[in-house]
Amino acid sequence: MKETVSVENEQSSSVSGFFHGNLAVIAVSNAVKGFGGQIISTYLPIYFLFIGGNPLTLGLMTSITSVIQCIMLFLGGFIADYYGRRKIIVFIAFYSIISPLLYAFTQDWRIFVALSMAGVLGTLSDPASQAIVTDSVPPEKRTTGIASLQVVSSLPLTIAPMIGGWLIQNQGLLDGFRLACMYAVATTFTSALMVFLFLKETLQCRPVAEFDISKSGNLRNLFGLSCSLPNGLRTLMIPYALVAFANGAVGQYYILYAYDVIGITSVEWGIIVSLQLLLANILKIPGGWLSDKFGKKRIMAISVLTCAPCTILFTLSRSFFQALTVALLLIVTGIYYLPAHMALQSDITPRRLRGRITALFGIISALSAASGSLTGGFLLQSVNSVTPFYLFTIAELTAAFLIISVLREPTKREA
Image 1 (tube, rainbow, N blue to C red):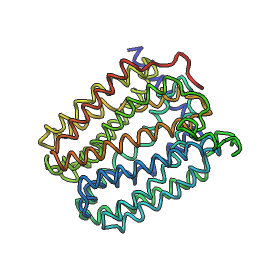
Image 2: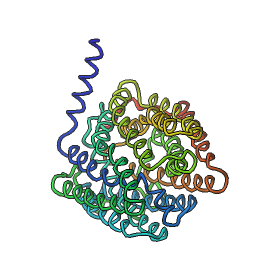
Image 3: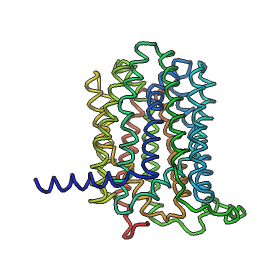
Image 4: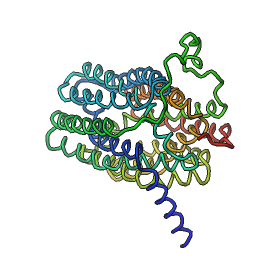
């Protein structure tokens, strides 16, 4: 009993100690912005089909936006490390208001694709945001800090899908989705004001002259990485890419399978997603503490290995309660991977390179997710509805094998 109390007190102290200054600003602004965004993203696939799209064009749209995201992350990494973090975060925060505003008036899937391509330009600030977070968390408690930030940022999101389901159930898909977009406009504007007023710079800006564009002969030089990447980063890339591919192959298609095969309503799907988010919030901080305590590699391997068969179980679901059980099992098994990965990546990456390394990993993730989404959409439309979910399992098992056999944690963490 005494040991349990000690662990809980340690977690509580760790969490409360993280949230001040920039971390508090980012946590609250992400929570406010994410609330409106979650309503849209939960029901975007069925709305896209409603306005004339199909699973293949949905996968194609996701793939195109992922490729554009690569370019944005590439540029964002430079901006974060050479020009500073704050300015780009503030600019993109206000730019992000445009997409949900225009979504509300779009009823053609082609225009929707174009707006999605414009909206993904907002990922330009992602490397800067992650760099500020990493700069602000103590190295020895990095996983717990990242997990804590994610929990606080996503707390309001737990009710967003149910609100979206209620809107669609009562107003219809078209009007309900439009109202969700207007909510997103309001929350995004509020979030932008927060970062504009309270966010502080964490990096002394480097002069433009320090970057020599003439050295852009290959990918490494193009990122301004004059020295070889640490071996740990190289071995971290492949399983990360496989996990991103696996999630891309099924991410947009859970709701389509639930609607078409299981027969779930919009309100029921909102309940499932809301309970997933709530469970994720409950588990992330203890999972982050376990990762810091027992090793990031071990937690990553267990997470991926146990998550792998869950999508096959999802295809066997034939009722709301069966789908809910499997959806929650996906969270219980898979929630620990990303915080542990982000912390391990930060442990290996020097502070002066974090913006560019974050961008590099973001590009790898985006390209992998793009190929996964396109493959999943093709399989869903041309083969059968269960194939993408089996592909997920194969990719996850491969990633788990590589994490166990190849990946090593550093003996000394970067500050």
